[in-house]
Length: 300
Image (cartoon, rainbow, N blue to C red; front, side):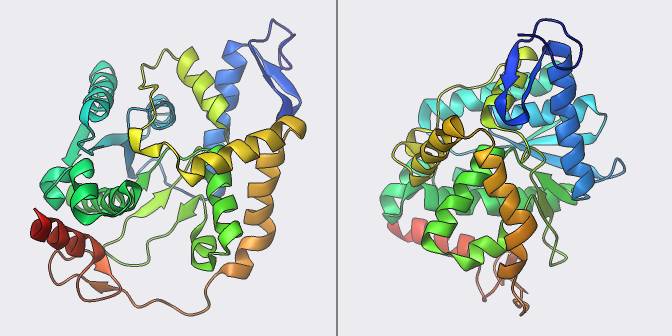
C-alpha cells in the first residue's frame, strides 16, 4: 500500500477518503482537518486564548498537541472527577503532557466544587453517574474560562462522538438537543464562553493514530461509569455501518449539519439569567449545579 500523496509506503488507509498516508503526510492531513474546522466555523483566532478541556485520553491530548504545534495560545483544563484510580491516572497523563511541553494546566476538582466526587455524588443523589458528571463538567469548564479570562473552550469530541450523539438525539427526537448540535456554539450571554469541537471532522481511529505517531502517552481505559452507556451502543451501530459503507458516519453528521440542522433552530430566544447563588448562567433563579450541590449536601 502506497501513500496517496508521495508514493512512499503508507502506514494508514482511510477508506472514507479513498486514501492512504505515510506518517508525515498523515500528520499533515490531520492538522489540516483541524485547521479546516477552525477556519470554517471561525472557532477562534490566533489572538485569542483557548482553554482546552483535557481528560487524559487520546482525543483531547491530540487536539491540544495540534494547537500547540500550530502556535495557538492555549492552556489545558483538567477536571478531577474523583473516580478512584481512573482519575489518578488520567490526571497524571495530563500533568506529564503539559510539563513536557511547557504549557499551563489548570486543575479543577468536582469534589471541591459540588461537595463530593462523582462516585459519591451518584450514591447520594441516586442519579446516573453520567448525569451529575456531565452537569458538573459543563459548569466547571465555563467557570474556569470565566475565572481565567478565556473566551472559548475547546473539547476533543471527534466524528464518532458527534455522530453517536446525533443518532441518540434523532432516535428520541430530542429537538432541543438537535438545535444545539454544532461544531461551534456561540456565546449567548456575557458569562458564557464559546464552545468548539475542532476534531469533529476526524474519526476516533484517526485521532488514535495521530496520538500513537506523535508518541502521546494517554490513558487507554474508558471511564468505568461509561460501561453500558447507550452512546457506546450507538457508536457500535455506526461502526458496523461504516464497515459496510465507508463514509457513513461522515455523511450522517455532515448531512445533518449542512441540510437539516437549520430546521431545528429555535425561533424564540431563551431568556438567560444569572444564578442568585453563584452568578453563572441559568434559565431560572438558582442554577442546576447549585441545586445539585444542595442535594449532595443534604444527603451527605
